Length: 196
Ligand code: GAR
Image 1 (cartoon, rainbow, N blue to C red):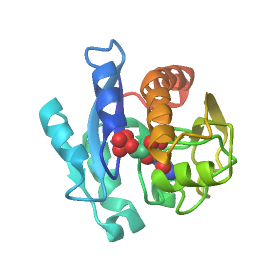
Image 2: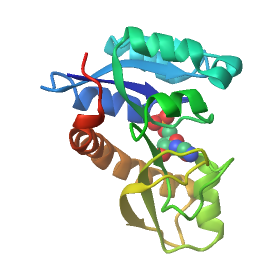
Image 3: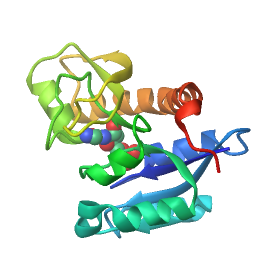
């Protein structure tokens, strides 16, 4: 069994969708959710879904030590960032080489980098007059949104679309693709994931 930790800062619609997808899965288990915000709605979702969720502050995310300890207790082998705003500390990246993936709500390398989160991304896409956007699922590295790309999917952008319309199209793509890509990526990396 591979245990996954989801890191999420906000609403948690991806986290919930991922948890539901892997319910009773034969070899993947969503074991915990970690957030940097005590009031994030993702905690309520976790509660309802019976998944333990924890909050860590900026200092904890600076060092990574306590988070690594908690993940060891839950025998975590793989990390999924689903709407996570902070940088992952080097200590956690070192402990999970090629075992941390992120979803970004645009077609990287466009509209990535620090501050490019949620609606900022969709507003930028709209203001640039793009005719398409989409999602990117990628490994993380030490720079925001620059790790190797695993998967992209596209949707069109109409000139009449608001940023909210664009967000809805992108979120639909996230709901369809993210759990399946997590499943494929974990299966591909099984030999690198420690067994508990
Ligand atoms: C998602 O659209 C995700 O792609 C985006 O945040 C949203 C979180 O929604 N991530 C980023 O912008 C990362 N730079 P959710 O909390 O409802 O899953």
